[in-house]
Length: 122
Image 1: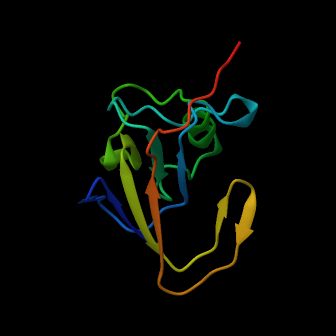
Image 2 (image 1 turned 45 degrees about the vertical axis):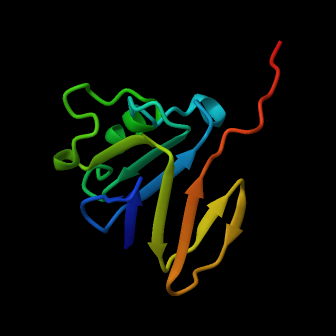
Image 3 (image 1 turned 180 degrees about the vertical axis):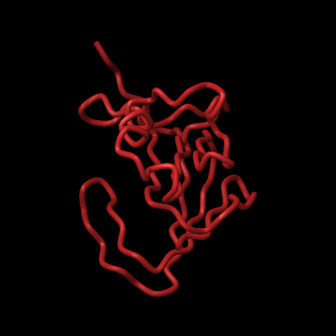
């Protein structure tokens, strides 16, 4: 169970199998589970348990191949947006940059990206 607010607005539902947030365009192994169209630095995707019941659906989501008619469609269990801030209220454990954090009752995780650091790529 996770209560989620993105840019101050609540996300429908509270049961999610997978919640991913990153400032990266693509994750390791070419995983690209983000398809939000907003111009914001944090990419966010949440999947409810029903949407990932079949392994094929999970593979499609992680590779960014969700059908266009179902993208961002909470009716199908997919939520993906680009946002400036996020807030997650949760009791379960979580992983940040590969570091595992144990469950803590009543934990609130705040997400923000101020875009002050730029990297040069050649």
